[in-house]
Image (tube, rainbow, N blue to C red; front, side, top):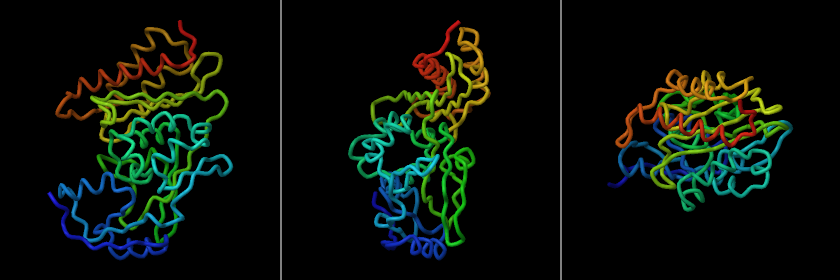
Amino acid sequence: MKAPAFAYVRAESLDRVHELLAQHGAEAKLLAGGQSLMPALNMRLCAPSILIDINTVSALGGITQNGAQVVLGALTRHAALEGAPLIAERLPLLAAAVPHIAHVAIRNRGTLGGSLSFADPAAELPACCLALGASFVLSSARGERRVAAGDFFLDLYQTALADDEILLRAEIPPRQDGDHHVFMELARRHGDYATVGIALNAKIADGIVTRLRLAFFGADRTPKLAERAAARLTDCALDKSALADAKRALRDDLDPMPDVYHAADTKLHLAGVVLERALAKLPLRRA
């Protein structure tokens, strides 16, 4: 199929983006990498009246560290995340996740902001941001506001972005002493969206988990923190009982949607599989 007719504007500044979004609202779509938008247009899954090209808006770029936060501009390409020394050093969870995103051609064009704003529940970067406790800065003609990752992803492909807002940047706490991260996903083929995956962020002292965030993707309508499972694995040695309890808790934490290949129960089982495999990579005291 071919995309429906639409107008096209290249915005040269953030102020121009704000002006166009205020004017067109829900009728506008932002064009960055286009790796999700263009297929959706061609399949007539969306029909905006105008595309706003933001690729030359310099305010949306950059990978920097600002005090206690690593700051990632919304136009940061996946390939830039994959190759940045700052990401490898300060955000190793992201560095581990990016090679799983589709294929090189997609990573060369796709952007952080596009992935977060599209909010596919099987995408890698939203879950990583959730696990890391990221905050997102949203911008409009009305000003800026910060939204925690846990409050940003509302439902299937739905976020806290208002019709006149653009995601400006992500602010993510960097790795500290004692922090450990594991990324893992199961997919039918490398480069496919994950059937189920996990982004794990833990603080460990003397082999005991003192803080644990388990962000699952492909296992609910949004990336989802498995808080009950994490609680069962915190402040105790890892043994068969704790692991079994954590796996059972996933049934209360997650509500996966079936797809054409997997039933919901299969996805719950696979969530337990990736949890166990991820925990095996941590330097834990095992009872």
